[in-house]
Length: 191
Ligand code: CUA
Image (tube, rainbow, N blue to C red):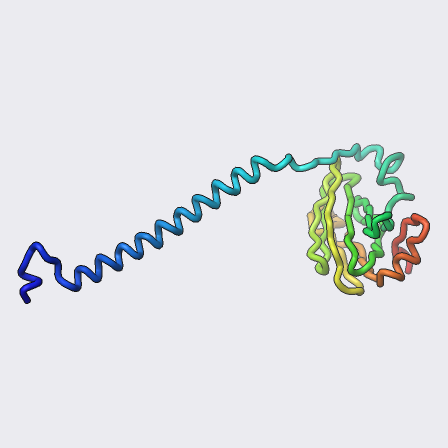
């Protein structure tokens, strides 16, 4: 009883409460400091990074010359063992309409649109790409297993949007290498 009556000495309960308040204040302070530090770190990190590389292309001459002429579309084996697949979107199809790709291999997807904004996703490999006229989309993917997948256009592009899709066939590495031998552009159209 003497404790509570002496104004110079706080009660034991008050001491405990005060200690708890200080602990929580320190914890909240530490969380705020961590969040602020994260913001500062991310800002400096982003400011120090080079700007995103944007590749532009003239949609009017796609079919005449350059990377996206018909003969260059499809998947190609690179010297380093990786694969580059090039595709073109237009209302309302993808070219090629069936992508043939190897499993367990780094795949670079390069694509663009000849008319309006299209896009596609492939559930396997977490692929989700937008194809914008005037720009080349560049995406890296890897497919763990062989199999067949649908590749629907996921950007509303006109009355035929719902019918715009392609197929993706993932085959074994050796099988792919055999088909793509000699720098051939391969696809599974008609197969
Ligand atoms: Cu192409 Cu929707």
